[in-house]
Image 1: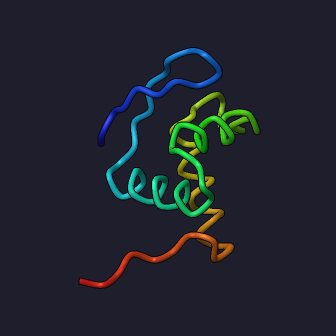
Image 2: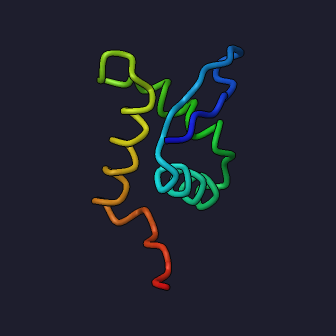
Image 3: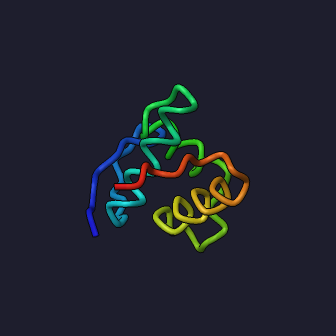
Length: 77
């Protein structure tokens, strides 16, 4: 689990995600022409639906994107 501080709507908050989720978040943001903090802000603005847990909201968003085929698979080793 990696905890990072991000700026959202003018205030700092921390987000804890496992490294594969951070990687997927950065990949998705890059594919949309956004920074990771900008994508996190979009997810946060939609409302988390998870009792205010932004980390869970990010994971659920990434899962939904993957299921919709909008999240590229990492290359095989």
